[in-house]
Length: 392
Image (cartoon, rainbow, N blue to C red; front, side, top):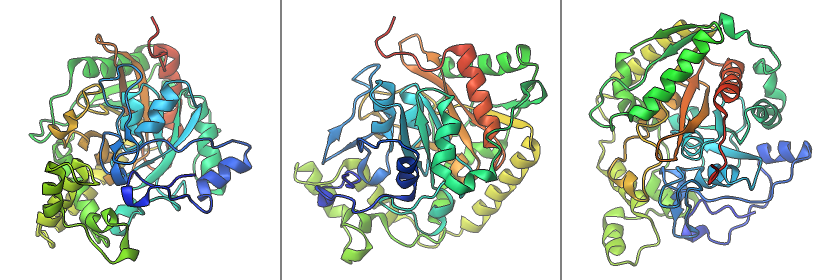
């Protein structure tokens, strides 16, 4: 199948072997039939590139599908595929699942093999990257995850029946006031609050509203982890990867883009420029990594083996095409959990007044994936889960 990652220089490139995840799926009898669209080099939250163009949302074709696994979220939402594989280094499973009204799961660290992806993660990025399932129905999550993980699935208790009455549910309906992200839409906050209320009143769970002050620095904490021990510049991947020995000069590339002569998208060029302007040895890095460690320790302690954390997946419902260029940092709502290395299930919660999917992230401590999936299954039962695009 094609393995372009939306890069013009890789157009026509066909993978010569299956990744471990695809191998596991084939062995289980599943039939891979399509590679779907991504953002260029999988590093933007709108799926558009110079190879395949732009993917449109099934609920409203003027809106985005998210990224980088946006094509996968879209094809599953549209009913053309049942189960898909996504990768997630900053929310690339969960944002498409949210914008397309389906389920997505970012597994615990090292549960599913990440080999065979392009671009490969390097340095500290390896700890951020997860491969996981995107599904239309919550009942397919444990099945897909078990197959994708293979022998390492025994690290988590997917067959354990969860007594929701003994669950502790923590919730937070915004990031605490970061100046770098948009305010959370009221419809998203209300959906989260309804989910928490249901788990408390109907399931008997203990529900508590919490506030983690460090969440407002989500972008800084994720960026610090991304920058730590980074080995290959993004501009090098834009030129085809480390084997080419070349880098794209993104300062020149922006003028080619303005003249309509660039093979690269504006988000990719912008990322290359930002990467070039950032200090190579940011003196804040050790302190930010320390704060990240403290937040992770506090969250894991509070969650234990019987707690979940409800958090918005994004400040707004699926925005118009190109609108992410005006709000490039809103992905911090998903990215923070990559930096924290926690499992997360994205759960649809019906549609907003303007007909776009609502949803919530359900987070747990490491290797407590069965808790987030159990909550996803209950919320699907209560709120209906996936809604047919264009349905009444």
